[in-house]
Image (cartoon, rainbow, N blue to C red; front, side, top):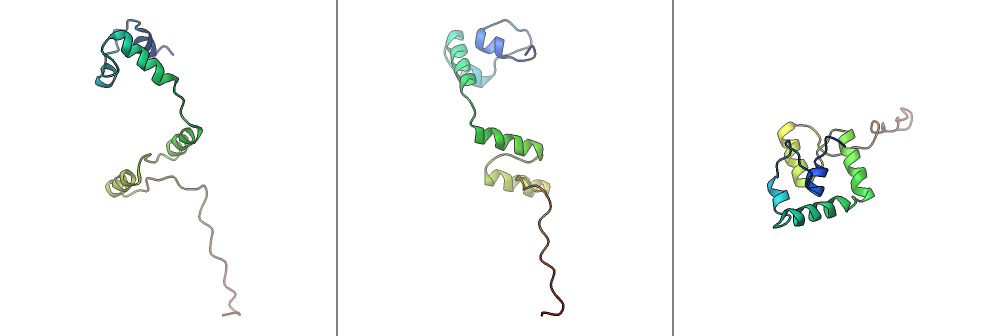
Length: 100
């Protein structure tokens, strides 16, 4: 993608907009080491389970993270931070007024 920093970080292509951040610089001692390490990171695939979790949380606009993190987000916002199942909770069965 033209807006991606991949060409700069992985291939060393010059880009006046991209500046190296600390995590990138920590990938190696030389430009070649950093670029190789960056390419290796990009090649790693995300598991299907993690990808589905990301999609679920983004779709519901929830906070993806540990239970502790979610609890802190819920405390700060007063809103649920975890993914919920679709639809409303089922109603309790209607009570028969004749059978008490």
